[in-house]
Amino acid sequence: MTETPVIQVEDLRKHYGTVRAVDGISFMVTRNATCALLGGNGAGKTTTIAMLLGLLLPTSGQIRILGEEMPRYQQRMLPRMNFSSPYVDLPQRLTVAENLTVYARLYGVRRVRERLTTLGQELDIAAFFQRPYGSLSAGQKTRVVLAKALLNEPEVLLLDEPTASLDPDTADRMRSILTDYQRRSGATLLLASHNMSEVERLCDQVIMLRNGSIVATGAPHELIHRYGRKDMEEVFLDIARGIQSGEVVE
Image (cartoon, rainbow, N blue to C red; front, side, top):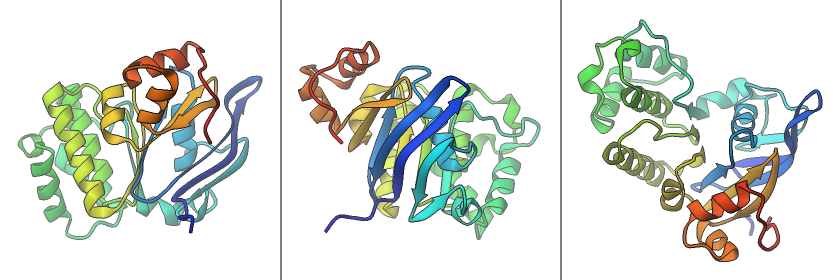
């Protein structure tokens, strides 16, 4: 029996005049899976994530999250989802604790202080809870944004470069936190990343985009084998440069 997909995308398109940012992509991600959305700059990754969140309206196509149509049922779905990106800032003048408290209330989190204490310890951010968010380093901001994404213990977590600006040790700890969270919660993760070792470690499924279209899919080890390469870094370079090997696996 086929498992019902948590994320289901069918013939999704986003056009800006003659520019086809996303051009008819279809894919699905099941419960408790981690899927990487990969591609060079301008491939359509961030546009796709924005449409999944309901921040951008598709030109055409269908998105279903946890069985519900997006963006039609966005308001009732967003409490079950969350998003992390180092390129989307939180209010600069609010302290870290104030920012997280505001977002916790928006997401309807119960026992907010207890939840912040837990995340402060797990992500090692408690020491700067009382500092303005705008005063933090890039790496500290990345950890706070990840804490914001985990506040409501989402069933679907969308991650855009989740370990950007982090040193290797901190990035490794953040990946362990995400893995542990998924193991406990059964959450579905979809991430865009340029860190191919991160993809190999975290992901069961890879979707490769180029010029808004899917050009290859499969598990990391399948793509490495298909392209005859030693790791996902080499596979990424081949696909980004338009070097094809084998047929697209749907």
